Length: 147
Image (cartoon, rainbow, N blue to C red; front, side):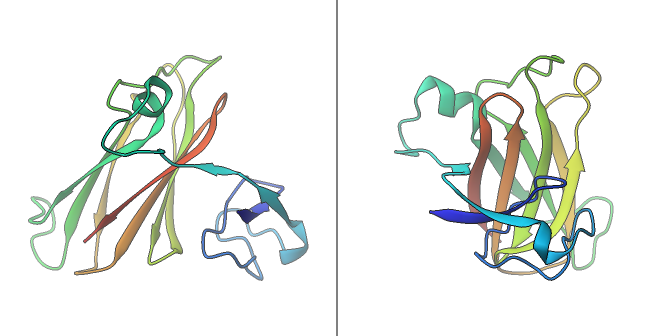
């Protein structure tokens, strides 16, 4: 499948349409190009191979947020069942979040200083949450959960 990808910041539009303005960096629609095979997903989510075990985002929903008790769900994401390395030469660059295929947030990770895990507070009761992580060596990987 082909995906619109921003040539400036690497944002991937998972709804299949290039936006008028990139929601991450503000680049115009002309900065997008269609790329094939940009996002990887597991062949069999019940039986992940070693590469998938290191790259597929593991998402946990916490229905009751401890910080914002009303209208909030915590989303915890860890990259890989086998924890992904965070070395300068091999790391997770960022994790993007989409709700019902529309971009909602990007969290940038710094190699060496951070673990490949993040938390987000979602103000939505239902929907399909897609998490896309970008490994600087092995590319983008996706996983979906339903709120």
